[in-house]
Image (cartoon, rainbow, N blue to C red; front, side):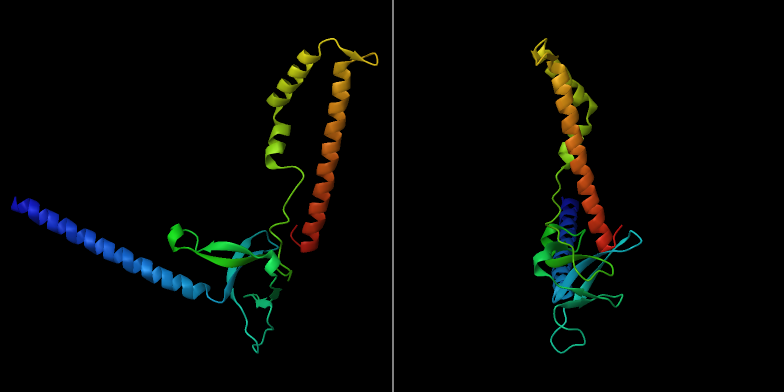
Length: 196
């Protein structure tokens, strides 16, 4: 009985120490994180060598060597602050959600002073629709169901299958053209930003 009591006391002491250390770590983490993010913007840079780097850049105050509204990065370049292109980032990554703090963030191409707009990423072809377009089994099943539903019906002297085939070819051509023009636009934007 005495051994059980000593074991329970030791276990309780270990749990108390672990709880105290957890609370101390949490408190110090919150203080460190808030001091680190105060007056700073988290900036993500896409470099020309296809790598990504990030920095916390301090906002400049009136009268300092850099005018207000500009950020000065570690490479010495100045970048514009645009509130319409800003988003929130939970920092630091890797910690539990309760310890992370939202910080304002901007995304830049290294050397381009204007930030990217994260809300302008809409495309005409979504990843889900592309998956459906490329799924051969689904296309075969759709074709088979269309052939079964048509049977021997004719329109203007041609089998309905010919009309559906021509319509499908036309639809694929239109979708291909839309993808081609979208990719050309994306490539032009990427070239203008100096990304690719």
